[in-house]
Image (cartoon, rainbow, N blue to C red; front, side, top):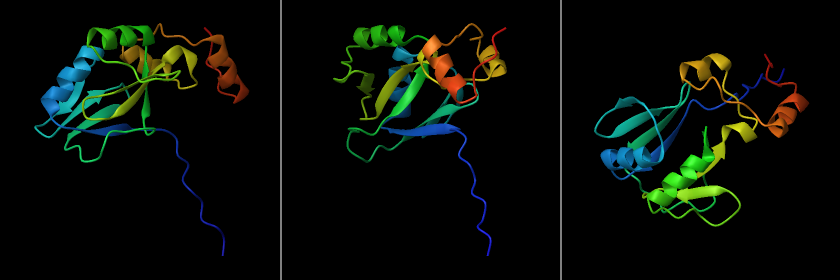
Length: 152
């Protein structure tokens, strides 16, 4: 009997975080990031990330994250570092810019310019971020996989 073809994972549509209160979570994340809401109800909110989104859901049940985390890509990592300091949030120890939100969700801040993750030009344009570029290191990593961005 032939082996069934497996689906290929191609990316993330969204990440869902459990928080204690939706309004408090929106206020917290609003101190750190400029964002637009995709939608909101009393038990959830959806922060638009262009062709992806971050879902906030009321009802955190588990203890604070330790190693488990997700990398949130931003256009300006240093601006987040400054916003964390202004909000009195101490980054976690280590070589990355990680922090815990008030509900124990661990988030690593990653600069768009230094990683392989790439938004399509039309998505960046729609987000008002057409001028975002990649470092030479990130471009080389992409080129090594046959995925180098077009240079126009």
